[in-house]
Image (cartoon, rainbow, N blue to C red; front, side):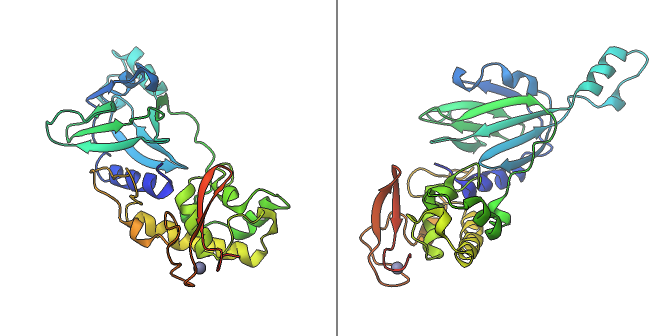
Length: 284
Ligand SMILES: [Zn+2]
């Protein structure tokens, strides 16, 4: 499942290609994605792509420029364009969704659910399990900002929210209402880096332990973005290339192997139903 670094990778790669490109066609091949919504995007130019939590938001501009019209003869049209605030297309990849930028004329890969055509290439949404979502909406009021873990996890604030909660700290970090974008891989890695046992009740962490969590996230998340994500199964970037962060993993999928920090043996357990890797020797 793509987590924050993977979605951030896609947004950065899309932002290098799409702004200024005009949408030539939108084909929704899976009615579950929301039939017909794409039609309204055709003829509009992409303004920007950005990430909000784990969503990819593509800002799409107005259809025409007011300056091309005569206010006398095109009064109706001018009014319509004044009302037109552009669109936001929101993509969420969920479990198995991925994006692929196709620039040659080969046939579509299996499980392609959506094709957005631009003059420079085609943006494909590929999703074997069909949980990914796509919505195009008129651009409304700006959404309130979500805390962005790439800009730092505020240790003091996390400690306040944790309060006296019994929820294991690993699940606290993965709660999308508290921290947006951290999933199983990076929660395991951050807690190992911080020397904190993932089973600890989140309310039991001392202030200095939250500071260690903050520092760990500040190392692990930006490095994963610089490596274009972690490929341990099916993650590929926009161009179909594997990420490289897997070489930095210290605990994830390493059960039975040696801890690179203390020489202990990496353990594995299910914690609230999710596979959890940690070093019982140095994570306290
Ligand atoms: Zn260890």
